[in-house]
Image 1 (cartoon, helix red, strand yellow):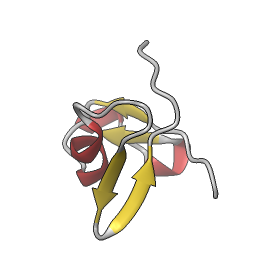
Image 2: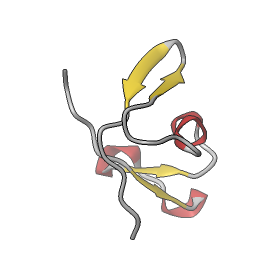
Image 3: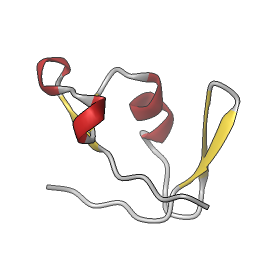
Image 4: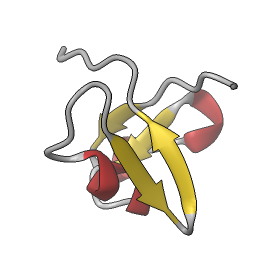
Amino acid sequence: GRKVHWKIVGEDEADPGKGTISHVSPMALALFGKKVGEIAVVNGKEWEIVKLTAS
């Protein structure tokens, strides 16, 4: 499948077109608390988490 990279940021920094999403976005909320190998579901679509990093 296709790989997508996101950086979770504050609402004022979010720009999905540039790969940053708000910490209150549906995708970010679905990712919180997940681990590599788990599935996040957003709007009925499943996303497998293959890598997590902190900056």
